[in-house]
Image (cartoon, rainbow, N blue to C red; front, side, top):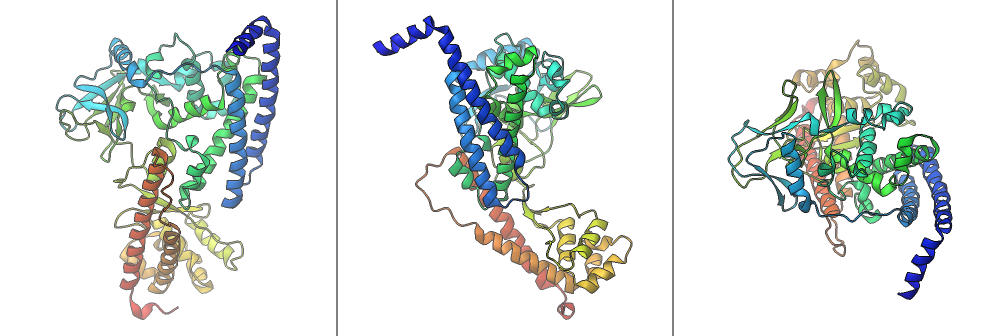
Length: 495
């Protein structure tokens, strides 16, 4: 105890020594940041997944070192549990004319905080209204001290979500911020992949989301390094404020807040990226879009997507999004997702002797630049675009010449029975068989997780749910393709 006390006293008596220590840490940090920027700049998209993972390991390790260095000279304010801030939050909403009679903030198992009905709401009835003045928007950022930076930075000019993230960091560090009650109710951390440990990210394989996660993580790491250098080299007053609070941990928190909560609303004549307090505490359920912006009353309005009884959690529909999208950008998986899909990486090999002919035909249909096609959940898992690709991919030279001679081979991209007859059973059998084999191989790669040594964290639970949903899509597609092949006219299936 005596030594610690002595150390503190010495530090106070020698502020120059403390400054030197901070300067040294800054130099060390700058070297690490440059490494991240270099690594995220040289990466080639054509790398295979093994190289991509090795590349991620390097980035992850350096960011870990950065976090250690940053934590050594940044003071972290003591966090207060979200629930303890609810009363001040509601008071702020009331003072600013938000209307939410019959609704209260409550905790729900598996959801953390959400909105609970304390009275009956009929479908399509108005549940709550949120005035524009309590929303935090990119427009607020543009009208703030951050505007000087926005005006000279092309990234901020083209990416309002990043602008909102930086503005959120500034406001979070401002004790007098108008939005302080809103910021204090936000989660301390999120279940986005930016918070995943290495073993959790690795557990995503063989899901296509594994590759998407690495790309997203790499993108955020690059943004952090880019803005760190800007903040510490440009001479702008607002950047001086950001210097002590712009850390990787803070940036991933701000980015995750934006990813999980941002919405587009129309203010004036343009769409604006915004946080919408209270409304953004509604969790997702399948249904219909029941939120709108009322220009005349200058407020957002939320209507009931179904009947809600007292005690029910109030849900809204986030839109027709796949579980991969919800997992990546919102940090959850919705097992009942009727809009779910699985991304397949498909393309014509550079070694294919018929490559040019196939690409020419794909170009006519506007498909040449597409590298990923979706399998969908439900009775019709194959889109018209995917069907066109597998048909063209499996054509021989004569068939390619025949279809290329036509002006616009629309029958290839149609699911109609008449179009199938025009294409012919021979081509469709090869196409369906190819996709059936591909789906079977992918399905076989989803081995059942047998490692029970790791506790089932929220991250692992989401990974498990995601992969289960993807297997369901694959199994549905396999069943559909087997049936489709059986229904083809047998007399015309000779190649």
